[in-house]
Image 1 (cartoon, one colour):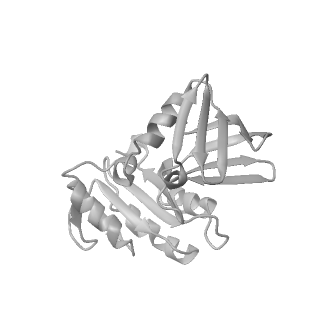
Image 2 (cartoon, rainbow, N blue to C red):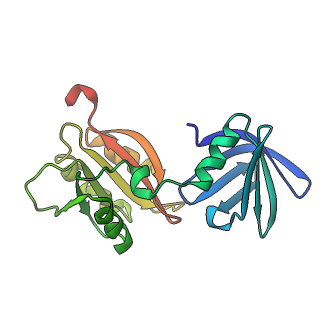
Length: 203
């Protein structure tokens, strides 16, 4: 993916080679025992030059050697997509929410022009968002998957970095329900979203 790349990071005169990921609200960098998170809101300056992306924050300067991706990342940092755009929802599309979601997410969907439907409505939605806070919640995925028809997409939103519910748990529940996962996205600083659709042979 263009938003995840192996690279070298230099900060404070020290360099580490690892993997960087440009998320919705932050940049993550992992290299062995090194774990770095740079919130996009903390970046005061972003410059791309000679394949290097140089970021300034109150904690200092960070230089990522990204090659041709440096300018693309700078542009995305300077002009970030909204969460709704990143999830793929377009104005006029019907969205069903199952579970508890932040009020600001609902408001963003409405502002974007999405049509919100209740889980009880007998309609086919373009998008279904399912909030799973634990493995117990995943027991409902088979029932929810029955509403995934044609080009409908199901986003399962779950906590990041938790042992009581992991990406493997979410993926296996979707696959066991006859769906296939095609994309992962950062939903918020505390939650990740995994996207499922019907296999092409079943559409």
